[in-house]
Length: 219
Image (tube, rainbow, N blue to C red):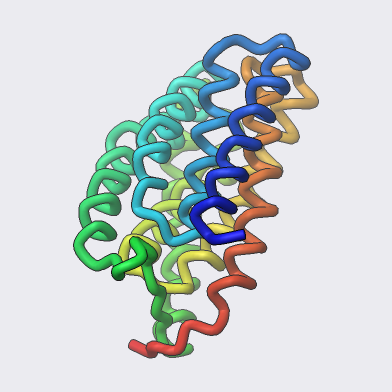
């Protein structure tokens, strides 16, 4: 089976799975849209396809709205004002450097730069969490801040085709899964689909780390 056919089959499975889950969970069209666009986003990204950013834009709009009604204002604000533009930038950036097979090739940093990125992400997460805690109705402020900061770093690194982005996003996936597990237990709006999306992101991200681990270009 060639790569194009393989990707198309997985795309179809994701769409059907999202539709079935929206029916089983008795969720609305928004639930289907956030699950489908989220899984297609991370799956196509793992395949090195620039088209992932189109679904990333859709997911960020849906995720922003769901986060707003669940009082996760950090994710809401950054989904609309930062993640959405970053997806547009990523789409343009990846389309400029893809190879003859329309596949993106990844690079990696030296260990010293990787450690600096991790430390910076931790400090920034704490500071953002402190400011979010000032908002009276804000929920899970430090988890919210960690999710946002890690997502920002991960998206920027992947836009630059750097392997470290997968590890940062894996950390973000773990934080997101904790957030939506808590909200799922509390039966918050649209939390079922976001919980499933978080699991899907985690699985595909682990696959991406394994797939791109042998990138040999060092910066």
